[in-house]
Every structure is written in C-alpha cells, then in structure tokens.
Image 1 (cartoon, rainbow, N blue to C red):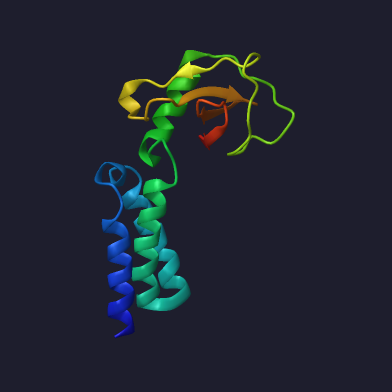
Image 2 (tube, rainbow, N blue to C red):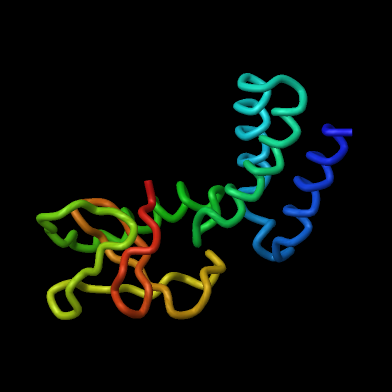
Amino acid sequence: MTNKLLLSVAAAGLLALPVAAQAQGTLRGAAEGAEAGSAAAGPVGGIVGGAVGAATGTVGGILGVDDRPRFRSYVRERGARSYSWGGPVQVGTVLPEDSVTYYDVPTDYRVRPGYRYTIVNDQPVLVDRGHRIVEVID
C-alpha cells in the first residue's frame, strides 16, 4: 500500500509540471534521482527519487541542462568581456545596472523573454530584468 501511495504522489507531481518545461533536463534529473534514491532507500527510494529528480531537473534552471555546454561555448566564442565582481557569483545576487554589459540570449535556447546573460568573474550567468542572477551556467 505504501509503495502505491508513494508512486501515486510521485507521478502526480510530474504530471503537474508544464509539458514545455519537461522537455529540458528531465531525463538526466530522473536518472540521477533514481540512482540516489535507490542507494538510500532501495526500490521505493528509486521510484520516489526518480520522480523528484525529474522534477528538479526540469524546473531547476531556466536554461535546459542539455543546452548549458552549447551555451557556454556560444558565450566563449563571442569573446564578451567579463565583469569583475567582489562578491559570490550565485543565484540571487543583484548586479549593477550601468557597469555591466548585458546581452540578449539567442532564441534557439528557448529562454523566456526578459532574461539576458552576462559574464561575471569569467562565469556566464542569466539575469532577470532587475539584474538579479537567476542561473549560474556551470
């Protein structure tokens, strides 16, 4: 009974995610979650871990997991100047408006309108309209 309940809850969580968002990162997240869940709690942990991992892989970033290496290459090829930041480069950091150059993300990366990218301490990042870092492209 417990296994069926856990499976139902995990499946319901996946079905609630928008279909368009599921296209990026789901498979890798599911695989990693299932592996970690199985190691920690056996077969039931694998089922729940896979569902949670798929959800995390899907909504964990704005740029899809599979697009990150290609995006890093794109940024490198452009040769844009990096902004030197004295603080940590992390999600939530708000960058200055005027001393940083922000660039539009090409449409083939399917990033929602309003997000741009810049390079901070040689690290590509996505920012929102308020210049807050929303994703660090590692």
